[in-house]
Length: 442
Image (cartoon, rainbow, N blue to C red):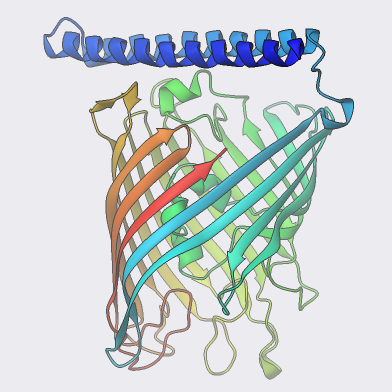
């Protein structure tokens, strides 16, 4: 009983210290804002002071955590050996949407619903310093409205030693990440609103079975969080990811003997001058996963490029996409030959200069996607759609956030719904929604 009370008291003290430190940080932010407004400090000086204070606070919090862990262990509450090295994570998107779905010949249907659009449960384990494992369950709703579980990730991760300029390498064996989406989703933090441009267009999804190797160029960017606002994919001169996969994605069987080669190459050209600037290329080559009569399996290739800029105050991306076919092998004309597509997308996020509690938590963001489902007009001459969305987000704590978003899509006369084939004289109706999303992550 004494041990239990000891742990409870220690936890209460730590929580009290955290609450007190949050109050102190809030007062510091308000004071610095006042000094900037009065011209005593420049914005750059204020930013450096806040970054240094944040870094010192992180070191202090980590020391407090280590001290608490040490004291709990000394009191007899040590973690059992069988649980050492485990890490548990959860991610959920809770969505409310009100809008209209498009149907052919100008029709549309209203909807008004609450949804659990995604729920991930992840378990990671360090088996050896060079051998790790991960499994992620993906909870989603099927076409009948029932919630089902499926496997999103299940792979072993080997961590090879540094090889000259190539550092921080990870070799994934199993059902793992494809090179692009995990990278883009750590630049654009609003995956909870909807999928990224290429996935939303129906080109591929985010995981597949195969083998891949990823890493950084030249080690890690020092103080990446303070310089760019993010510690993800923080290679000093960029990052890379190459793999060989089945090709159909993580919720499709492998229907052919072909393997798809995928690669991402990202360069951070000026890490000391413009650390947030990155230039990325994605290449995919293989065959689609569906056979079409005598035509066989259609071609599947992707060429895409993106320029991104990340800053603690704002984010901007611009990407261009050229493809032939898609991963499923469904993007074909009447003869079974792959359609060629073309598109581009722009995204921006701005952290408003409004201090809430202890940080600037409010964001304004917007995105524009243009996608031509049939660049060569094999099915229709007006198979394009333009999607624009924008909204406001509030960071609650770490990566927990709430969004309020408006989204509208205009379709060409021959366009199909996003991710679907174009149809001649389809004339889809209104596609509009107002959306509120709560993202929970721990």
